[in-house]
Image 1: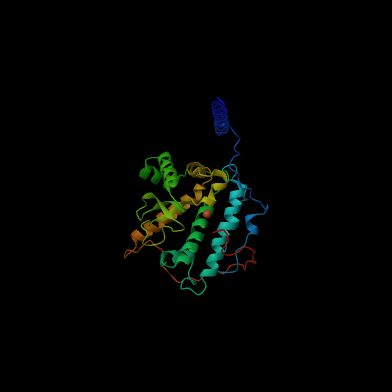
Image 2: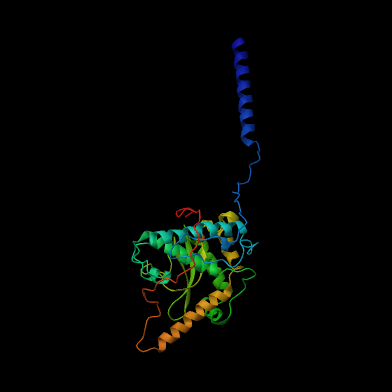
Amino acid sequence: MKNNKILYVSFATALLLISCKKDTLVEVVDVPDTPIVKIEQKGGKPSDIKAIEGAFSLYVLPFDYNALEPDFDAATMELHYSKHYLGYVNSLNKFIVGTKYEILELDPILRNLNLSDAAIRDNAGGVYNHNFFFEALAPKSGGEPSGSLLESINKDFGSFDEFRRQFVETSNRLTGSGWTWLVSDKTGKLKIVTSANNDNPLMKNLGISGIPILNLDMWEHAYYLKFQNRKREYANTFFSVINWEVAEKRYEAFSKSARVTASAQPVQSVEVTAEPVKHVIQEKPKQQENSVDEFQ
Ligand SMILES: [Fe+2]
C-alpha cells in the first residue's frame, strides 16, 4: 500500500513537471524587433569629403545626403558616399601607382584592363560604377525619360513600365554583390545586364559588353540600412530618384558618336581607344583620416 502511495505521488509529480514544461514551451514572450544599427551622421556635406592625394578625386555629389529623402535615406547616402565610395577612390589612388595604368584615364583603364589585375579591376570598377551611379541621382526626379531614350525603351521593351518591371526583377534576382545596367549595343538597341562585384560593361571578355546608360548599385551597403532584404522595394524606389536627363544625354551622346562612326571612311570602332591620356591635373586634395582599405 505504502509502495502504491509512493508510486502515485511520483506519478503525480511527474505529471506536474510535464505540465509545467509544456506551459513553458507554449509561453508567449515578447521578441524584440531586429535591432537596426544606428549610424552616426556627422552632418557634413559631400563636398567636405576628399580622397587621398592621387590621380583620381571624388565626384562631388551636388546635393546633401538627405536630399533624396524619403526615397533614399540620409544615413545610407552618407555611409555610401563618404565611406564606401571614398574607399574605392583612395584604394585606386594607392594601387595604381607604378602600374601600366597609371597614365590612363578611367575609361581606357577599364577597356584595356587585364582581368587578372585584381586590385585595379575591383577599385577602378568601383570608382567608375559609383561615379556613374551617383551622377544619375537627383532630388525631385524620377518619372520617365524622354526623347530618343524613351523611344528606344518603348521599342526594345514594349513600354516604359515593362522596362521598369524587368530592371527591378533583374536587380532582385542578382545574387551577391553587383550592379544592374541598362546598356546599348552599337546599333542603339537597349538591354539589361548585370555584373558581379565591381565589374562593368566596359571590361572585355565578361560577356556583358555594351555602352552604359544607367546603373544601380546592388551591394548591400547601398540599401540594407533602410530596406534590409527588400531588394525589390529598393530597386523600385530607385526609379523615384533617377535623373533621366543624365541618362538621356548619355544615350544621345552615344547615338551621335555612332552616327559619325557609321558615316566615316573607313569604318571605325565606336569604342574609345586606349590613348595614353594624362589625367587632368586636379586641385590637390587635403589628406583624410579614412583608411584606404576601410569599408570595402
Ligand atoms: Fe556602392
